[in-house]
Length: 322
Image 1 (tube, rainbow, N blue to C red):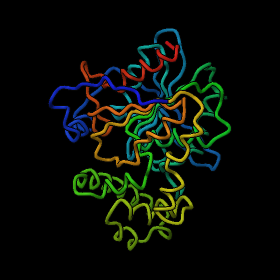
Image 2: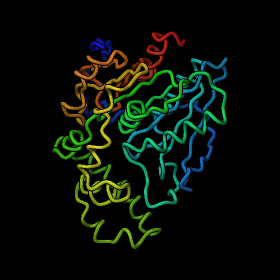
Image 3: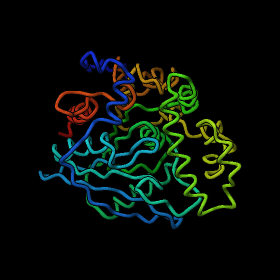
């Protein structure tokens, strides 16, 4: 599908990618969303929590929302998405990955960019317990990579899943990691590492034999974290093997439902390989939009509704779902 021309034209201040990223992540507040938590027991005995919010108007379907690295279902980009979908008649199920709902998960493993088996379990649970005719997926950053990989790798995607929206997606995990290791992203990388190390110390108390102090002290960069923990806990050889197996880029050609991918050109987390022009050109179901501005999961717009929140509704309208 040819490149979609973006209509996003923010004010001057939000044409700075870093400001857009920081404002959305630190300063934005979303009110008026009431969430109800449900715990899902996974097939390996572990658990994850999902937070539901419900539309007060006749139901048009369900949207499953997937957060980014070290996010959760209470982040503004999730609650903002839930709010607008609820307004337009969709229920929202916001997934907290393992260990992301405020309580450590039970197993040595946790979540990662390619853990589509957990997404599959959530979807199967919903299909078994609920009666929705139409289900949509919306993911941000890591969550966007997760949903794209899921849609492209699986032959078991339910016919009830009608479409998806993915925002600020590191389609090439290695390319994104390379960007996060550069000087321009040092503050973001430091923040991510701080949260990841804090969770790893929690997990160390549960599995002291698997996580010695020497390993934690050896984690200097985000790549080190993936070498020392992510790869070992999830059966990859090392960080590069993890990136190679879990990057969504290689799965895009097999996506067979309509997907809107929005990656801003000023997103400092994304390198050239994260903009899949060639893949979009060859797949009629992949709509690639590359706004000049937006930063990473930023996209501020008027009335405290982000551009990607409005654009998701517009995309469903274009699909004839609204």
